[in-house]
Length: 100
Image (cartoon, rainbow, N blue to C red; front, side, top):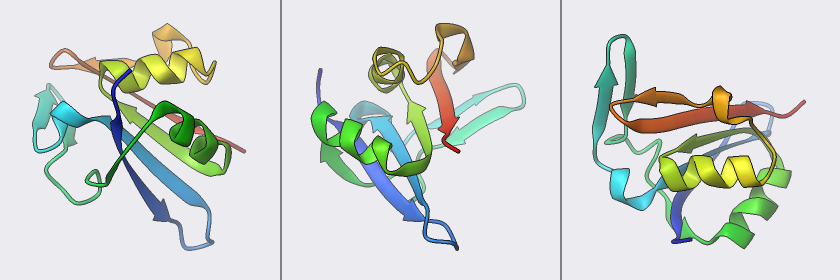
């Protein structure tokens, strides 16, 4: 599995929000009907990270967003989602997890 782009945001209460995106998708706008992902914004731009680093970061997150085939596949392998949980827009899978 290739490296993915990860960005960490902090919520007002200090909890972590992660965006995990296939590197080849950064800079794209994905639209299909009412669904829209704007991967041109700084919200999704981050640092390339490998799967081991991402697994550790997800353990400390409140929310994790996975964008792209490899990223969503990682969420599946981590048993964070079921395949039916992913939304597909313009042939790009997307899902998010909230950890309570």
